[in-house]
Length: 215
Image 1 (cartoon, rainbow, N blue to C red):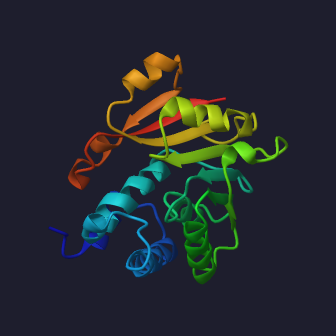
Image 2: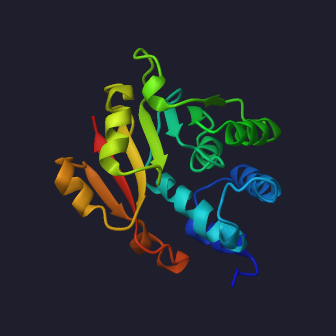
């Protein structure tokens, strides 16, 4: 059952976010619900828990990520704008590119970004493998897009070297389920793994992790 006031719960989980940030996050959730009734962006059985499940999941990144002004981030397979839109709201001085290969999703994300007045967001349709080699970002974000080895192979050459941000430049991947076999079979070595269910046990996220690869 959905909580009667999910925002009160989120305020408690993320006390450092500003009132302006919360107002835009509320509008984003309204827009996502509006669009999701027309185009399936988020599982409809999850919509009654949108804030405490999907939004909270993405906002956990703010517990760890500190960005310099004009940092550049790429959200691959953004879908309904998760995590790219919440992150662009939370980090207004950073620049975000939200990418998806499905035209209707790109159209929806562009509409929501425009209605939210997010001038730090660029939305594009395509596959990350097709981006020009000269394109690079401080961080590449992904949320349950594909297996870790495949995602790593797609984006490893899209990360600019640097350590002015915290953590150091790299890949930030939101992963559900057991990640160990994927890491062991591929030989990938993450710099850091955060257990998000331990961070927010009340959210009932299940097995959810934020994995950082430093490049």
